[in-house]
Every structure is written in C-alpha cells, then in structure tokens.
Image 1 (cartoon, one colour):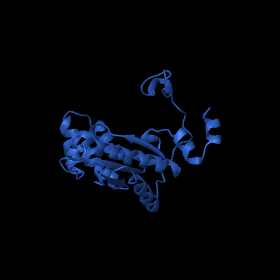
Image 2 (image 1 turned 90 degrees about the horizontal axis):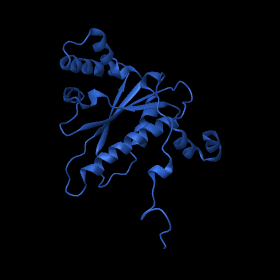
Image 3 (image 1 turned 180 degrees about the vertical axis):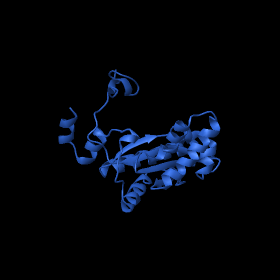
Image 4 (image 1 turned 120 degrees about the vertical axis):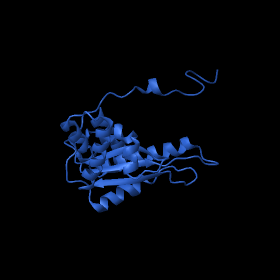
Length: 203
C-alpha cells in the first residue's frame, strides 16, 4: 500500500506519508555537515508563529559537546539516585552520544498580552516537527524524544535554559539503518469527523 502511495505522490507528500521514527541507538554517522545543520535549523524556524515572538530556540550538540552535556546528565542522575550502580550512571552519560547529532528544541513560551501561551508551545512543537521532516528529506533518520532529563531542573540549568524555558524535545539525527517498517496508524473514521456530525447535513 505504501509503495503504491509513494509512486503516485509528489516527493514531498511521499516523504510525509512514509516518515517513520528510528531508535536513537540505530542512528549512525556521519551526521549532517555544518551547511546541512544550517539548512535544518533554517527550515525548523519556518513555522507558524502568532505575533512573531519566536517562542523557541535550538541547542546543537555534536562531537565532544555531546559528552560534556552527558556529564551533566550523569551528575544529575547520581544526585537523584545516589545508590545507582556505576554502569547505570555511565549509561546516562552516553544519552546524547547515541546519534552523531542531537538538537534540543527549547520552548520559551510565556505570558503575553495578546498571544496565548498555548499557541507559543504549539509553535515550538511545529519547529521540532519541521526539523524532523527536514532531516528526513536530506536522507537522515530521526528520533524525537525527551526522557527524564528533559524535565530535570538541574540539567536544564546546566544547559543554559532560563527558568521559564522547557525542552520540547531532543531530536537525534543520523544515518538510518535502512528503510523502516511502518506501524499501525489510526483509521481516519476513528480520528476525523465532519461538523456538525456524520450524515447528510442538508436534512
């Protein structure tokens, strides 16, 4: 079914119809070049943004910076679980080394006289999704995840997030292991309705 869709659709729609996440550990190098990263972030920033507030920003982790950030994660984990085994602490240290590139999408939504905070949060989510799609369009695989450290204030402070900022997601980017198998998707009749309801509205 997906193969038939792919052959009948323009490239952009085929990408959207077949996009699939990978596990972060499945993504290998080499990662995107500096020019490709600039392209990814440029596309990620082209999202609906009511009021032109730019209620999001990006933190790029590549090379040894992934391990430096991992040391922060490991320290927070050790403080949270002082009896943790060394191998568990070490696993936390490697959180951001599973893929060659990780981009944190930071939501900086806040109170505004006109723009609801919820709309700002949604804009950050759109930026994360644009980043995922742009990476897929360049031939990379992606994994959009948060995990516990995205909500740990010690980690957020160490990564330079302000008190009102939150992590919308860590986008892991690398070479995919192959074409992914699709997973079941919800039937349209279960998730879509037509207002004012089903049936003939003219009666």
